[in-house]
Figure 1 (tube, rainbow, N blue to C red):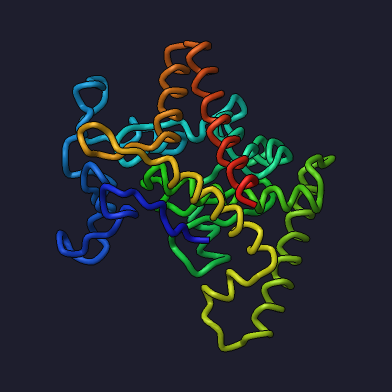
Figure 2: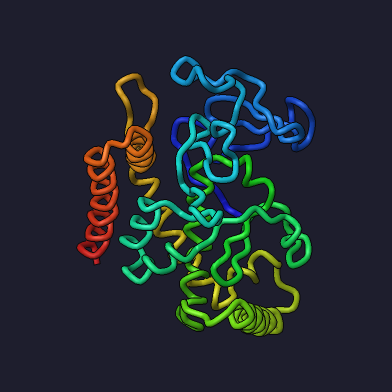
Length: 289
């Protein structure tokens, strides 16, 4: 499903295409600088360049595009990182946050999820060029997500991790070999196809995007995605200078900085604060009910 974006109150909302600058689709408006997707480069200096003299001021995510993304188009954050076997995995703060919001069983889904950039798969199986498709444990993002901002990475992942959870709930998490795993993925695709076909037959003239959202398997993912979106948007605050910050973004940055500095106490503090933030939000919803 393609991400709809998270609202940021002090700019345009999503990181939008600005067709007036360089023509249709050739300029992306981030909060802090503009990006040209044709060459994969920002055409303005990073406003934090003085803090990071070891990076070129025009770089993205510290030139670690696959395992790091930029929050608000400003600086890198380890939303996902490569482990020892070469797979790109979600980081512990991200896994813990979704588990606190969605349910403890999401620890398994978060730890099993593999993050891939795979445009070729999308071209074969879907009709869209931007978004993600989840098959088994693998969340496959389109090429555009190699240049996407951190908040939209989070929103799309908040949807796709539900599909990882659904797959595990149906077929389990352990497989004797890769062939058995691939058979399970094939069965999952068949189940999804049957569900999608039934939705289409009920409304053959319906809008494709609306029909997608009516698929039973998608409804659970959309519900949890909305939960995360509301949680994230509730964490914006106004700084003294009039700009807006976000507590989730701040804590992810704090955890990332502590990890880089091997500051275990600082990392634990940031991690615990993020989990408590999600816990308090969930409790507030329960109290409203």
